[in-house]
Amino acid sequence: MGRYSESEEWADITPIAQNDGGPNPLAAIAYTEEYSEAMGYFRAVTARNEKSERVLDLTEHIISMNPAHYTIWLYRANTIFELQKTNGSNLQDDILEELQWLDNLSLKHLKNYQIWHHRQTLMTRLDRIPPTELAFLAQMLAKDAKNYHVWSYRQWLVRRFALWDTELPYTESLLAADVRNNSAWNHRWFVLFGQHVDPRSGKGLDEVGHIVDEDLLDREVGYTEDKIRLAPQNQSPWNYLRGLLRKRGSLLECKAFAEEFVGDVEGEGEGCRSSHALDFFADCMAEEKEAEKAGKALELLAKRFDPIRRNYWNYRRGLLGLGAVQA
Picture (cartoon, rainbow, N blue to C red):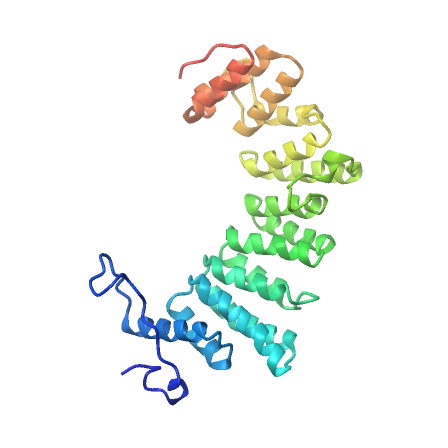
């Protein structure tokens, strides 16, 4: 007794069994009967290149059992597009209906990559972003603020629909809620500078003549410093600050700021509130050719504030021509 073998709707289809290597396969996969039957019918409809409503029902059934089956997702997308051509339906309406179904599935399978690739495939057929799309992504990120698949898709969406000017307030709301949200810091950088990057080569236009907006850099440096003051031991904004200053070619602009957090560098580091500030300060000293001062900051990191990475800090000291320190 099977869902499809007993159905009149599928009486014209002869399922194709999976070939595991003969009657006595070495390592046959123990599929359930339900899944094996559904896949047998799927192989049969793909063999005849059928694109129909019943195929959509079949792929939905298989996805409910195995949402990571990429081939099923791809065939489902192609079926949706083909049905629109043959039935003359409104493709946007078909896609919006598919997205509504997809929303519920995405909330159930938060880390499923194939779901997001399918969503992206659908979006390539639209001229404008659906009005509920960003709200749904916010719902997803509220469940997991660091969901890589959602962030990757959102960045693609920003580029696809040119959302550069409207996305920045969203990053500010995320950082106001959690200043340690490294994904939000990454997205903020993408929103501000990603539009000046060739997505194929990864090279920024500022590397080949694009003039960086100095007012924007001033604003972002001030914004980042304010966020660092809220949580000095948070690495993400320190990295963000470095990226901003590299666009100007020097870290020294913020040396005095870093000194607010490093404490007694000449002594034993009393009053140090951030190992990341100490690292930043060391690079500033190296930039000023103050090797001994840079080396002292690196020594404090190796011996007191970040000894787990002592070998790395000693490597950095070696670049300055200084000897290694012991714990």
